[in-house]
Image (cartoon, rainbow, N blue to C red; front, top):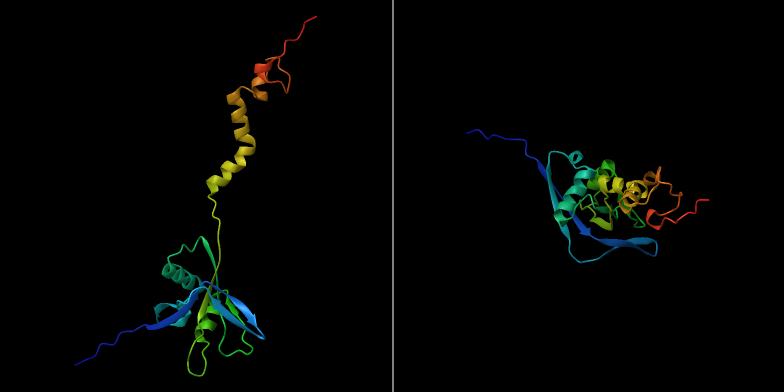
Length: 173
């Protein structure tokens, strides 16, 4: 009997705290979580290099049910092998790899800390264009609708700042 062996991906589990902040306690920093829940995500990959910064953030957002395009998240951890304890932020793929491969003597990895910084304001391009147009185009449109505007005054005998409905009678001498 032959055993067919396939390339079996291994599982990398990442435990994380969502929403909290760092606080300095003497020479050390500590993580103060907002709630006491600990979350976990699992990656089934053939190598740790496949777990990228963008993939990690996307999976955290999916787990927490948040839109990755409207939230700004900071990822960080307190390395178990550094004294005094300081926070280390994850900013790119290399930082993710260092985080995943940094373990203590008992092969434990630090808890990942996810800071929920702020909600990003997304403004659609069409909204930006319409706001830009308000300063010139829509003013002229409103003026035309009201019957007041320089274009309407051409050849009418109205003075530059004179409203057409308040045309003053001029005496002709």
